[in-house]
Structures are given as structure tokens and as C-alpha cells.
Length: 545
Image 1 (spheres, rainbow, N blue to C red):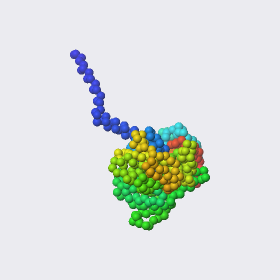
Image 2: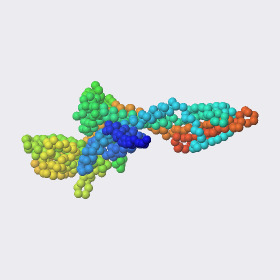
Image 3: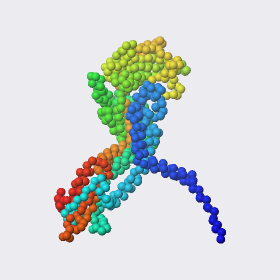
Image 4: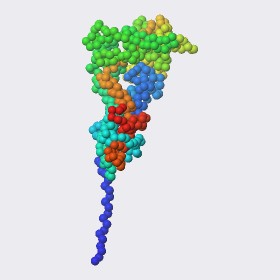
């Protein structure tokens, strides 16, 4: 016979996963990475870092005047920061992206942990390990009494522990009794409460951003303000689901403003005497009196009104060449770097009398200057303030005539003019002068500008956030969960009891070997002392403490 062998069958090439399978595997890996606790901690750190610009830089939502002044002081850096949302950090897309990823990561991480914790609560304590001597804490002793009596003694001393009592076969030896005990499950519960509260806090903040709104406005002392529409505010920031048509109407009458300072010029307190109207009373002569202070908001119909700033509004009387007399007043913005409230601003006169047609743009006036509450002249005649209160008010003004550049449609700061108009000669400086109350400066065409006085203004912010109460509750439960997770220790202890082998000649087996092992789920100090107490439970007589 001829020995013939079949040709070898070539090994099949391993199949490559298709694009769908590969895509699903990629998404699965991304989801696992996103929902890991490590990723959640990284995102939480990024959220904290991303919040720093909101604390270090002025924000449009908190103080539009200071934000505009910051951009004006840093003409190169300021516009770039504004473009990337650093002056509206908590509403920027990049902050919202970190916020959303953190929310998804926490939910994906907490869901399996919650089911695992529920399973641990429903399960009995784990079986006693075979070799208790290998555990970090262990003990072995002989005590008087039979096994069942000693086991009852130990069980009665483990109050507050979850206990499981079992029997264990020992080939060639008497059967052993084991006791498994666990304590400290509230630690994991505290962790879950903390993280679920963090999720709830994120949801509450998100709801506030969706259905809440904020608005800021500058109101001169002695004037009134009514919140009826977004147009009533200097700056209005609605939530994504707010169109501004259903604002709760209210009115404020800023009667007086008081700022107290020490002799060295340090602020002591700020307070505004404010009348308020809400609901049906809005627009009537019925006012409720309130004292509005910093960090003590006024609550009106679910809204909060904050006092966030103050400053000065100089008043000017302009007598034009044709004899027309007009009064102008414009809030000036305090210099953020000057504690003595030296302020800058501009009064823009767009429609001078006696001029029509295209000549109007050639004869517009701008009074650009500095207001000093307590004026003093430095070297070179530069005016500045030496105290924040208005003890000796004065203004240093530059008067310009020409085209202010507002007809082009580009927005301008209310506190300054467009310097490009000056650079190209469209605005020409006509005069410069330091003025005290009652003093005037006269232009070449006979126009006279008189500094007539000042009054103070307050910057108010209104805020509506229906989820604020929930945010407070979640913040409190976060602290409670954190304290529970830090204070409570998770630990386990096991006992193995069996009679002394061989049994004494009396046959009573009245001595028992007790092996004890302990394991702490954390490395907190103190379990060693507690373990010694637990091991001594076998020595105690019934009822002994």
C-alpha cells in the first residue's frame, strides 16, 4: 500500500472586524474612559481651573462698567479675551462643554457603583478567609467555654455590625464555627450622596441657566427704574428658554446712596435707601422702603436685586452759540486701580442746535474727562482724587468737535470716544480745562460748558433663578456626604472558633480556640485599637462590658 498524506489545509487568516464592529468597539472604549472615576476627577479639576477667569477677571454679567474699562485699559489683550469668552466664563461654550462632560462622566460612573452598593447591602458578609494569620490584624487565643457559648458571647458584643454565622468543616478535626462581621457601609453611602449631590447641583445650575436671567443697570440716586422688558436694562442676559416677554414687573426708586469710609479712605459700608413696587402696585404711588446693602440682596417677586457698585455722575450745562441751553449728565466709570474713585467718562452731544443736514456730523461735541471726588492737582496740572468721598469735586475735561462716528453702526463704549476718529482728524480737540463746580470753559465759536455739580449712581443687578433653592439643598447634602465619607471607617472582622484539639479527658470541651482576623478598607489610624477590643470579646463573660 502506498502511504498517501492529504495536503495540509492552509490556516485561515484571522478575520478583521468590519467598520461597524470597529466603530462600536471605539465608542465602547471611549465610554469606559469617560465614565471612569479618574476621568471624572480630571474633569472636576478642569472645571475648577476654568472657573478661575470668572473670579480673576471682570465679568459682563457682574459689572459691565468694569469689564468695558478693562478692555479699554488693555486694547490688545482685552478684545481677544472677550472673543474667547473670558469675560462671560460661565456662559461660554468651552465651559459648558467641560460642564456637560463632567455631568455625563458622573452619571456613568455612579450608576454601576450604586447597583454594586445595593448588592453589597443585600449580600451577607463574606466568608471567613482560610488563613486569618495573613491579614493585617490577627489574633489567636484560647478561652474558657464551649464553642456555641463563646460564639454567642462574641455575637452579642458586635452590636451595630452586620453579622453572618456559619459552620465550617475541618477534615480530621471538629467542625468550626465562623463569624463574619462588617461595619462602615455608611462610608460608601456618603460617597454616593456626595457625588449624586454634585450631579444634582450641576442640574440645578443648568436649569437656572435655561429658565433664569440676569440684568444689570446703572441708576442715578434720585431716579427710578422699572423692570418691564429687557430694554429696561443696560445689559440683559436671558436663559436659553427665556424670550424676555414674561418678566415679573417691579420698580425701584433709588432715593439716596451712602458710602462710609475711614479717615484713611478705606471703605466701611455702602447702602442705598430704595423704594420698591411689585405686581399690581408697580406704577402706583405706593412704595415699600428698603435698605439695599452689599451681599444683602432685595427679594422681589422671586427676583433678587443686588448692589454691586457705585460711582459718580458729573453734570454739565452747555450754552450753545445760538443761545440754546441744555443740561447733560453721564455716569463716569471709576478706575478699578484707584481706591480714591478717580473716574473717567464721556458726554456725547449728537444733535447740536442750529445745525442741520450733513453739517450735524461736523459739529457734534464730546466732553471727555476725569471726575475726581476730592480733587487735587499733581505736577503738570493733572487732576486726580485723594479721597473716595466727594469732599472737593472737580473735573478735568477735553472738549472735542466733529464726527463721533456713531452713524456707522459700530457700537461704542458709553465711557469713551472712538480714538480712531481723533487719529484721522474727524474729531478735533477744542479745549482742555480743569473745572470746579460753577466754572466754565468757552470754545472758539462761543459755546460755553459749565460744570454744575454731580450726583452718585448705583449699579444694580437683578437675578431670577428658580433652581437656587435646590442648588442650596444639594450643596448642603454634598457637605454631609463628604463628612460621612471622611469620618466613617469601613472595616471587616472574622472569628473562627473550634474546640481545643485534642479534647480534654473530661470530654466536656470547655475550652475554645478563637482565631481573629481584621481588615480595614482604608488606612485610617485607629482600627488597631478597635481590633484589640474586638478580639477581647471572646474573653468577656455574658453581660460584661
